[in-house]
Image (cartoon, rainbow, N blue to C red; front, side):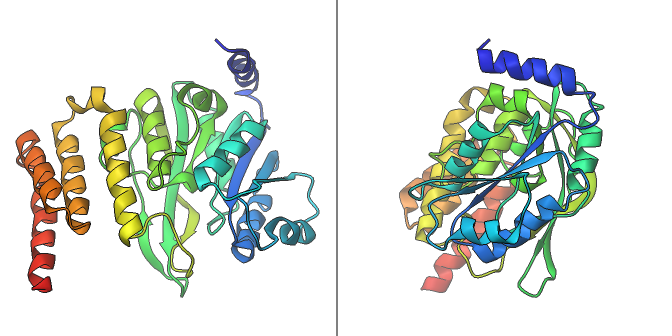
Length: 315
């Protein structure tokens, strides 16, 4: 075992029952200082006080760090900066490398936590065995009028890998609280993925660890604020979706034979996005793969009919 892993294992084993272990909160940001203020504020207002809040500026040009620094005089705030824009995964990894906490949590710059988020998650995870590597919570998505337009309320606990292999069923990064030893084992975020990086991170954790859940909305996600998001459906978004699903087929190749239904769902998703990209040949190839793998897969027919409907409308 590497020296860093030995150190973190020692720290965790001696602090897992501690009342106030340090939690490292990592916020990547890029040119959204006005929204970043809300995110940082929601961290500093946590009822759990033993935390460090690491803001990683991914090469912003709007003086994000200086604006936030002027707003808060809190020693728990740490500011890091990339000289050039990379991506959110890279910024999160920079924060992970700098962090000192026994537990880690992540928040996007356009979202916010409710005040008891960390307290409730930490109270739960400290009671659980070390094979439970992560606790998540519920989150609601809000539109520009502050109305809920989507809910992520999952009840999956234990070994949930089969449930997250084909879809991201347990929310996103802002809902997580993770043991440091888990990240030392599975690694950080895959910086080569332009879309679905948080799902990939969650999937790799769920492959090796069990998870638990706080069945309560503790995260507010804002999706309709006029700024770009990784999950989009323009040409770039479609291309990145194809790459993300194909990466999943490669990364979890040794597991796919155990889960034919989930594998068929992935194939059907790849087929759909190839169709969106105008690549009819590859679209048909992956629909055929999905059918051969699991002919009762609902997504084969759902995505197939959707593609057919779009083709008809174009005529």
